[in-house]
Image (tube, rainbow, N blue to C red):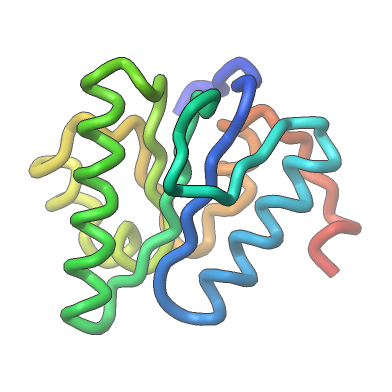
Length: 132
């Protein structure tokens, strides 16, 4: 994925387990350190340029919630309310190729071990001290 210019504001939605919450918090720390604005209010996308959805892919209901959430933000993107939609986490790890085929409007899919790539693509400078 080509490095993107720094977005004005990044929205983060964390779905599923505690690991996803921790990964979302790590993402937040990296973005904060790089002076990227963040919103954790998924009910309002006003002013958000890029939405990052941290998904769950193990339990049926969680998969459904993740897909519905992705589709909602893809719809907002198609309406011009968002510029980019990124999907990360377990659902993206397990079903990346199928998701790319079924939801091509998503700008990028990241697996559970690709946080550094997410940081880079959001314009954050990776700081390994923030991961300890």
